[in-house]
Length: 480
Image 1 (tube, rainbow, N blue to C red):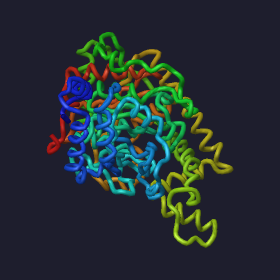
Image 2: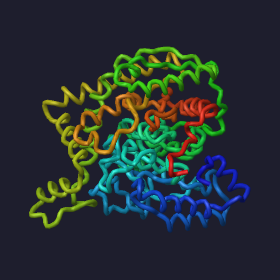
Image 3: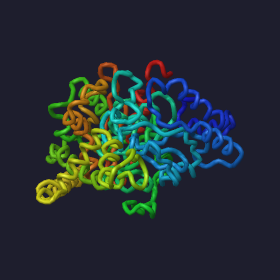
Image 4: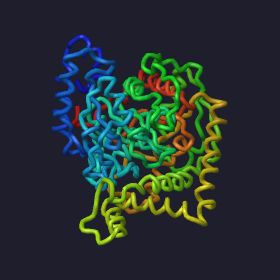
């Protein structure tokens, strides 16, 4: 069953080939067999999943009735621990469902559990978790990317046909590339942020992982849409993404930003991307070089804006209302300082301190305000590019997955992992990673970026590529 696409699973369910209960049991068995070696899940919800599947078998199903899904542990789930992979929220049981969880529930999906991640989504490797690092199924000594590494690793290993993720600066696209699965970050505002625990509110966006663009189209179609409870949600009709896939890219103009293909990109990864781009030319697309002159400012801009918003968002975790509370505080100041010092990991503390600094008196204009102005220049690069091209193609990462611990002591080197994904996040445009080949036995992803709210174009271009290649069907050895 785990070798089938979501479309195939839907069709098999419709013909009665197997029940939702049987499908759920199959994936729960795979989780039990394989996840100890991956650490991709924080919380399993076996009993609730079996009950949900049995109930779906008794009634009329919705569009994705009985299809299993894993939720990133940043989405609130009623009655289930929502930890954000942090000691701070290790004991937090969410009293309500996030908007994304509600929508997938309404579509009939069955939640199997909550996936591991970088603490509060801060990281590029899924090593910054209170519950230990996630391991890449292609090589357990390597990282799966982050912050949504648990979701990407689980889908790559066949522990679920789909999983949710969030992307603040590349946290869907980067782990999708490093784990050899398909992952999409929609336009900012396309998917509800209600109940998604905030890291950087002007950047965070929910999305999904699956094996193929067609599978992502089914899931994104279910999870996207306006939510009045989210002030950043955009009231705009959601197209039938899956129904509009025709695989035709003839006449499409694809732009290659010269800044993305400069020094720093590993030679073998460059060869993989060149082959993928050549495939698009064979399919009838026109490829041109474009200039995006402010790309090199994206890393410094992001690492001012995101920590600034994080320092504000995480101020609520103080040991008073909920979350971790230190033992025997002597006064209120002791309660605050020790609860936060004990509850937050090193990377979260680092970003809170950076954010507090750039927002402080005397530095706000020099850093935060200037970063916001630079963000506008980066967005303008995309406006100008999309006046000339229909899509942008680029690398996702400079190289395949690195070894666990390799960059743990060098935060700057870790931050540079996001150099190709940050511009799209700062501009709020949709982007996705598509499996395109291998370098040294590890997956390499091709990044596709589209204009605002053109997720359908993005998914169709990825679908066209996957109709003539098989990279997205490859399964890590031992997980067949």
